[in-house]
Each structure stands twice: as structure tokens, then as C-alpha cells.
Image 1 (cartoon, rainbow, N blue to C red):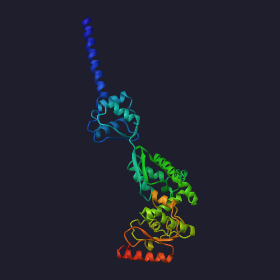
Image 2 (image 1 turned 180 degrees about the vertical axis):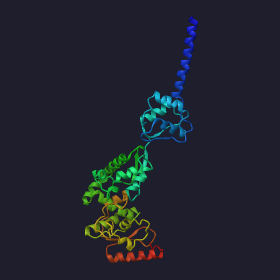
Image 3 (image 1 turned 45 degrees about the horizontal axis):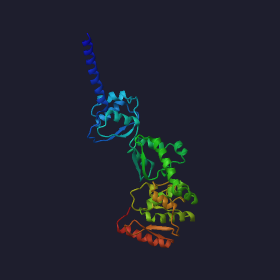
Length: 344
């Protein structure tokens, strides 16, 4: 009788040992492939556990889904709505290591690059390529009057919120999170290098500085002459002259492929057309680079009132203090355009 009891206990003990060993292996043995081609796991907001499991398996990031499911339940990882985010995983991780990492929520950040764009729709498109927020959601938020007004902007000035730079985000950032991050970055930018104080000393708001900077941005690609061009426009504002900035006429007509500004551009009736309306346009005509913003804030002090593109391919400009001098420069440039067969 004792032998039977001992034998039964031995069998049970052996079975239990194998069972526990199997569970230990399920927990601690590698379940992420040693040769992992894709190290990024993206879990969208409101994902279910089966969707997460299917994504891991489909992307060849799991060897055995059965053991992963078991350990996920054991470690209480399985939820109705899984923790969203973008996570970097490593080869040969065990189920335990993988689940701990996904559950802890330590995300791999993404970089959103904002550099060029004329409209907030361009910003939305760029951001949506990198973060979870859909471009439609971003555009709807950007055009939500009550939200934008509460942040100190309107439809015309909102694009001045966006300072061209590279920003780090969590992948699962929504539209509101993106906007709030941009507001924080905007405030930080203007507090640096005495930018707020310089704008105030010029009797210009931050939005007005950005608006003028957007015109400078579209006038030249040469950072070296941006402060001089900014100085020309500031001189015109001080004298009460119309800015007559070609890029504003192009923006007004939306004829962005134009290589030559014609009468149809300068005669187009729009508050953005500075050939028609005095002062700055109601808002920026594009994003303005940091170099253009700083060029306005640190503009060159001179007596130039006019400038015109040089009659060559340099992209640089000739400056003049008098209308007669400007007309000579403009005549040379028009002649060069005609020689190059640049008619529109």
C-alpha cells in the first residue's frame, strides 16, 4: 500500500515538475526570433489583445502565439483595451521580457520634421505620416475656431504657431496632443535669445514678426541677405509705404508655379496682396524658417527701400535707396528674364 502511495506521489511529482518546467520555459525561453527584421511594434489606440497578438505574429515578431497568450493572461497583460504606443523590441526576448516591455509603456519616440509648408493642411499631412493622429483630425482641430482662439490664434495666424524644426513625439499622440506640444515648443522658442523682447521693441507682435519672416523666406534662400531684405520691408513700414512684396501676390493668386510676377498677380484683389493693401498681410504666407524669423528680429539697419533679383542665376539681389536706382536694376532683371525665355 505504501509503495502504491509513493509511486502515485512520484508520478504526480514528476508530472508537476514537467508542467512547472514547461511553464518556466514558456515564461523565460526566447519567443522573439533571434533574427528580427522589424524591431518596432505599433499598437494603435483601443486595440484589443487579439489584434496585438495578430500584429506580432503577422510581423514575424513572435515564435509561439499559444505560450504568449498563456503568459499574457498569467501576467495580467491581457486587457479590454491594450496599452497603445510604438515600442522597440529586441531579438530573443522571452515572453516575460516582451510583455513587461509592452506593459510598462516605455515607448520608442518618433521624429516629426516640420520644415516647409504654406498651409496648416501641409502641417497636418507631415505630422500624420509619423504619429497616430489622422490628418483629417488634425485639420479639423486646426479649423476649430473656439480651440484656436483660446490659444491666441485665428485662421490667418495659426501657421505662425509652427516653428520649423525636428520634434520628438510618442507615436500614439492624438490631434490635441500634437497641438499642445506645438504650443509648448512655440512658447519655448520665443523665450530664447530675447526674441519676445526684440519683437516688443519693434512694436510688432510675434505673429507679425513671423508674417514678415514668411515674406523674407519666400524672397531669398540666401541666409546672408535675409537681414538686409527684412530691413527693406521694415523701412517701408516705417515710411508708410506699401510693401509690394511679390511673394504675397503669388500667394494671393495661389499661382505657386509662377516664375515671373505679372500684372495678373499684382492686380489680384486679396488682403494678402501687398500691392493692393498697405501694411502686413493678415497672416503668414508660409512657414518661416528660424533664420528668417531671426533675420527680422535682427534686421540690418540701412537706408535701402528697394531690391530686385540680380540678372543671373545666383538667387541674390541688388539693393537701391532710390526709385531711379531700382528701376535700373529692374530693367536689367527683366531683360535677363526675357533672354532666358522666362515669360510666366
